[in-house]
Amino acid sequence: MRDAAELVGVLSCTSNAADVISRLRSQSLLQVTTDEGDRRRKLVGLTPAALDLDPLDLLAGTAAWVSLGLVCGSAAFAVGAGSGRRLWAIAAGAGVAVAGYVIEALANNSDDLGWVRAVSPYAWAYQHTPLADGFDGGGLALLWAASLALLGIGAVALARRDILS
Image (tube, rainbow, N blue to C red; front, side):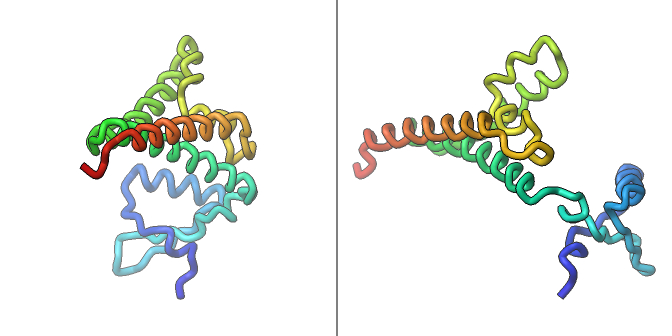
């Protein structure tokens, strides 16, 4: 069986990819092997262990990511249960994800718009950089509270729908 690090991927080198590979190699985070008959290079050694990530911080990053996804899914459930329309549910879930990302991007690029971070689920999840700083209890609490509120709204809306007829 191949080493898990060898299964990271195979990359055809372009000028941009070559720059990234050379930077990672210079930091000893990546080893590149080349097959003689193939122009592709195999990336070896790009693992969380090579990045010196604390497992608890990795768990914090995963918790933030899952919580952010739960907010988007809960919004889709609430709208879908209330409207009965799959398209609206998908649009609501995707809309929360896209709107949150756009709000966070705008806030990152303008000091005048820093206040809008208060409504961005991305800011709630990643404002304190979970891979470096660990768990952010306040941000995760906001994400879970929003998810529970949306799930509650969806459950009430679903209970009021006459699904059988």
